[in-house]
Length: 186
Image (cartoon, rainbow, N blue to C red; front, side, top):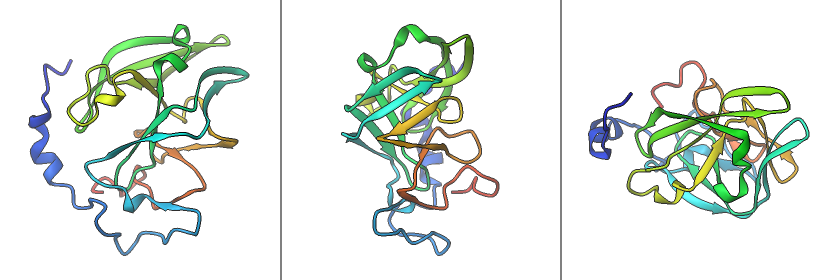
C-alpha cells in the first residue's frame, strides 16, 4: 500500500512545521495549575512512560489495562497512549495490516476490535517496525477513544477533535488541540 517509505523521505514535511513547542502561539490557552499545555509538547514528539492506570473497555469488557503505558506528546496534539502487548487482550483484535503512515513513527497496522457482538473498525493500531526514536512502541498497541472507552485512572477521556488523530483529551490539557476545522497548518 505504501511501498517502503523511509524516515528520511519525510525530512521536508517535518521541516515545514511552524510550531515546535519552543513557544506558545498567541491563541494558546494558558494552562491552569494542574494542567499541561499541548503547545509545550515538542516536535519531534516525545515518548515517555506513564505510571497511571490506563484502561480500555467496550461495555463491561476490559480490552486492555496497564500501569506500564507509554505516551507520545506532540505539539498541539493530545497525547496518544500505548499499552504493552502483554497487557492487551490480543484475541479481541483483528490486524488489518499496514493501513496508515505517521511521519515520525512510520507505518501503522490498524486493528479492529471485536467484542460483545460488535466490530469496532479502526479502534486500535500499532507500529510493529517503528522508525528511529520510537523503537519502544514496537511491542505496544494504541486505542482510539472515538471507538472505545478509554480511561486514565478514573477519568474517561474524550477523542481528539476531528476524528483523525487518536489523542486522549482530559481535563488536564490546555489547548486548543489540533484536529478540528482550521487546524491543518498546526
